[in-house]
Amino acid sequence: MPANLAENVAAAIDDPLLGAIPSPSNQATASRAKTFLCSTSDAFYDPSATERSAIAAAFAGKNFVVYGKAFDLVELHDSSVPLSDPVALAAAIDSRVIALVEVKSTSRDLDEEFRSHFFSMSTAELLVAQSLGPLFKFAFVNTRNEHVRLVTLQDVYRRAKAIYPTWSIRFDDREF
Image (spheres, rainbow, N blue to C red):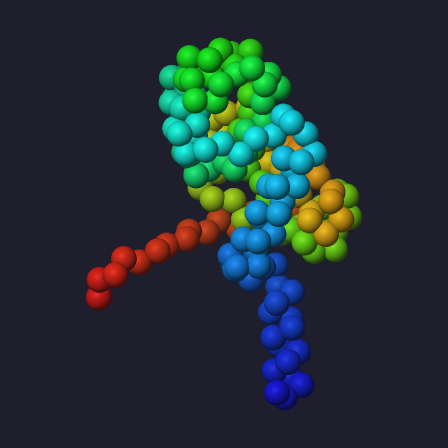
């Protein structure tokens, strides 16, 4: 491989825009980050599909917008709340002992403040974060050095150096 091509490939891999492209290694990092965060506190929980449905229904019953794929974990500060019971969840929402958490992970060598970190946010995540306000958090997890920062959308906006709106599109199996 010519040196120029190797240098171009290396530069592309370090490009923050290309770093946002999901890959099997990114998915593995995300999975490790969720597992790590759950191990740091009993307040973090990875809900089942049934629990996700009940959580979405409870938030919808309180006029919040929630898409089931727009969060990874639940932060629950009352372990007696059954996550499959929309009525109990509605009470947890009222008392603010529950928050939805979207995990943003990296294995890059970053400091504890995630300076110069580049990440993607789906439109669904943005809409849910805007709707829930402080009941929606982003957990930035570095699996390399185990740094964690739990922040709101407002915190993200305060730290944003630049925002690049994008759309992710998946084609069906049909021909054009």
